[in-house]
Length: 343
Image (spheres, rainbow, N blue to C red):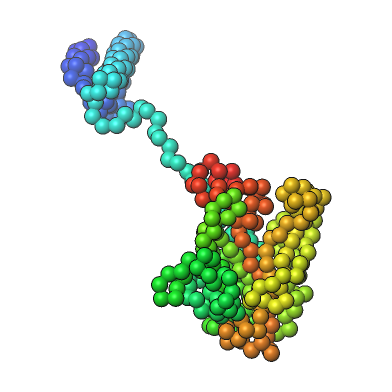
C-alpha cells in the first residue's frame, strides 16, 4: 500500500509539471480526484483488504495525499489565471477578453405617434370600424375630383400639393381611401384609415411637410348627424377622459355637407382657459360632416338610399395635446431620449 501511494504521488507531480491550460488541469484533477475512477478513489477501495490497525494508518495517509493533491491543483489554477491576465494586459492573448462586461445592445421604444395611432384605431374598432389603408401616391381624380374638390380650389395649386408625373401626386389627405373603398364595397361601410400625408408646408413648431392623419367613414341607410355626434362623443371621452365635453362649429369642406369643426374642452385647464387654448377653454381636434352626395356618387353609392358621415384628424395634433408636446419637429428628430418618455 505504501509503495502504491508513493507511486501515485510521483506520477501526480510529473503530470502537474506539464499542466499548461485549464483543460489540462481539469483532466489531471479527474485522473487523481475523480469520484468514480480517480487514483485516490481506487486506493480507498483497497482499505477493506487490510487489517484493522493498517486501515486507520493508511486511511490517514490516503487523506493526506488527497489533501496535498487538492492544494496543488488549486495552486496551479491560480497560476494559470495569473498567466491569463498578464497575457491580456500584454496583448499576447488571442480572442476576446471574456472577463470584461459585454456591451449591451441599444433597446428602442415605441414611437408616440405609433402609440396614438394604435390607441385611436383601437377605440374605433371597439365601435365596429375596420382599419384600412391606401396608397400614398395618388391620382388627381381620387385626391380631388372624386372628393368634390373642383379644379379652381386652392388646395389643387402647386404650392399646396406635391405633384408628380402623369397627373399623380403625394396624397394631401387620407380621404381618397373613402372613394376607393366605396367603389369595391357595398354599404354598410364603416372604416378608419390611418396613414401619412404630404403638403409643401414650411416646417415650424406646428407644421411639417409630412404628417399623419386618421380618416373615418360610415355609410348606411338612415345615418344622420346625430350618429356622427354620438360616435365622436364616445371617441373623445375614451381618448381624453370621461369629463371631456365636445362642441361642433359650422365649417366648410367640399366633401361633406353640412360640415363642422369639432372642439373638446382643453385637457390642460379643463375648460377654464389657459395659454394652450388661448383662454377659450376649447381645443380643436378634427373636422367632420355628412358625406356629400357627389362623393357617394363617385363611390358608386345611391345618395337617395344611403347617407353617411366622415371625419378626419391630424395624429400629430392629437399626440401633442395628449402628451403636452409643443413642437411637432420633436416627432421626427430621431432622438431616442424623447421617444423613450412614452413607452
